[in-house]
Image 1 (cartoon, one colour):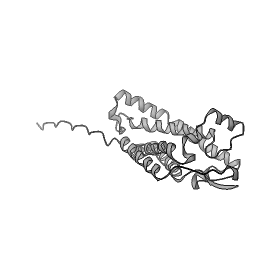
Image 2 (cartoon, rainbow, N blue to C red):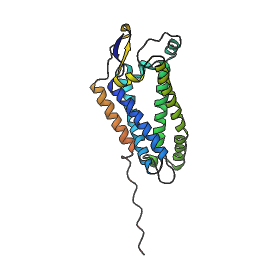
Image 3 (cartoon, rainbow, N blue to C red):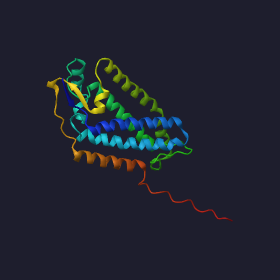
Image 4 (cartoon, rainbow, N blue to C red):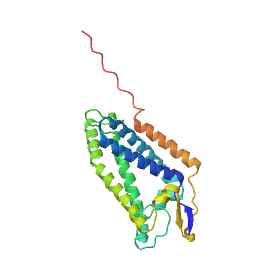
Length: 226
C-alpha cells in the first residue's frame, strides 16, 4: 500500500469553505431578523465558490476535473459489478456531488432574486418583475429541505464507509489516500495559471451576484414643506 495525492489543496479548501458558508446560510435563515443580511452574504459567497468549482472542474488537477468522475452508464455498471478501481469519486459518489452542487447553485441563484415583500430584497431582485421575484422566492424556500436531505445522505455515506474501513474524511483534509501500489496515479494539471483564472472568475461572480453594478434608483422627489 502507498499514499498518493488525490485531492489538491484548492479543491480541499473549496470543500470546507462551501461547508462553512452553507452552514452559515442555513443557521442565519433559521435565526431570522437582522441575520438575514448575513444569510445574503453567505449566499453570495456560495456563488463565488461554485463559480470557482466550475472552472476548477475543467482545468484543475486530475481528480478534480468533472470528466474524471462523471457518472457515465459504463462507469456505473463497473462500480455496481465490483470492478471499479479508480481513484477519486466513484460513480455513486459523483451523483451525490453533482446533486449537491446543482441544488446549492439553484438555491443561491434564486436567493439573489428573492424578497419577503417586507424588508428583504435580494441583491438582484430589481432585475425581475414582482411576480417573477415571488415565484423565485417560493422556489428558494421550498427547496431548503432538499439541502438538509442531501447533506444528511452525504454524512451518512461518510459514516457507512468509515464502518467498512474506508476513511473518506481524512483525504479531504490532507489530500492523500492509501491505495495498492498498482493504482498509484500521477496527478496532473491544476497549476498556478489555472488557479488564478479560477479565482478571477470567482471574484467576478461575487461582484455580479452582489448587484454592485446595478445603478442606484433615483431618489424620491422631495415633498414640499408647505
